[in-house]
Amino acid sequence: MRRREILGCAGRLAGLQVLGGAALSARAQSVGVNDSRIVLGQSAPFSGAAEQLGLQFHLGAQLYFEALNQKGGVNGRRIELTRMDDGYEPERCAANTRKLIADGVFALFGYIGTPTSVVALPLATEAKVPFFAPFTGAEALRDPFNRYAIHVRASYFDETAAIVRQITGTGIKKVSVFYQNDAYGKAGLEGVTRALKTLNLAPASTGTVERNTVDVAASLDAIMAQKPEAIVQISAYKSCAAFIREARKRGFIGNFYNVSFVGTQALLDELGKDARGVVVSQVMPFPYTPVTGISGEYLAAVRAKQGRAANYSGIEGFVAAKVFTEAVNRAGRNLTRDSFIAGIESMRNLDLGGFPVDFGPNKHTGSRYVELTLLTEDGRIRR
Image (cartoon, rainbow, N blue to C red; front, side):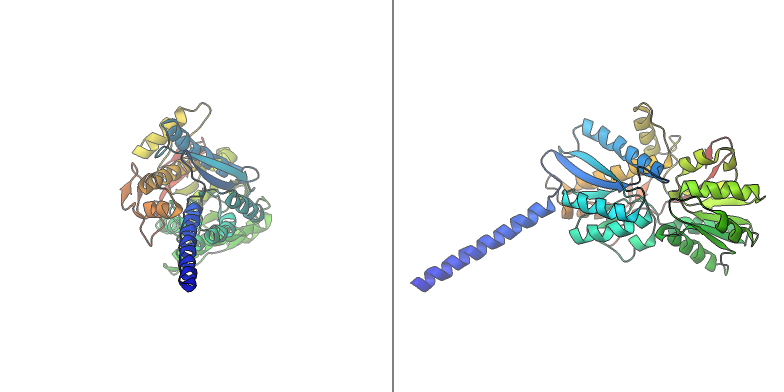
């Protein structure tokens, strides 16, 4: 009799432990969510040489979330975006990420840049926190596949392939690369090199610049020594602008090509009349006129907020917020990180108003949309 009592008690305890474990697991999956809100965390440059990228992306996302919250949120929950400044420095980003995860955010949203994202993603993965819509196209964040990494934009390989097609399609063969000496710049250099290799070409010359600096003299000497016909730039807007101005002073008359991360509006503002002959690849629809449904939606939100201006970084934040919200809506009222990821993976061939996204169980990059734009000396951006 005593033995049966002991075994029965042990069974009841085991059952309670299983139930308790399930409850703990459910609570862990629901971190950052309650009946009235969903809390997201963003580490981005809100100061320093790349601050406009972080600021404009954040403002674009907030335009969407604020309008959504005014209508009652999604499934009755407001979406709140907590931001922290990392100055585009990996060490600060890692510290911010640890704090955001410890504070219990539901997901990490809209990180800006490759060197910062590559230190943040392992932390997110270890904590099983979704790492959503980083503003980077680096292949190292996409391959190998990571269940917690979710990309809305096209990759740098997509962008550099489009740039190389454009350049070589005009008969140009001497292409040089100016790149930031970090994971971002090297990812872009690899993309250009791969695209040129398919044509039995290689970069004519290369030059680097350190992150958050504008010391371009040495790279200018190295690149110009080979007399390139076109120069691809993989850096932030301030260093790219500094290089362009100095190259023009030396008489370079060819075109400059930049990937989207440069920050189109910020680069245009930095260059002024020196913007002539500068091309930028874009991974978002044109944001300045309502040429697509999503552009019109974004412009209407911009115009509703006094003092806001449309730009490519802003629409990327806006689109990211829209995709995030769609996934939350699909996850239903019982929102967990797992159900959110399932919501993302259910978004097959979805048209967001002229911007199609296509995710899947083993496909967490939603878009390969790329188009090229031209900057003009009178301050315009032409498609």
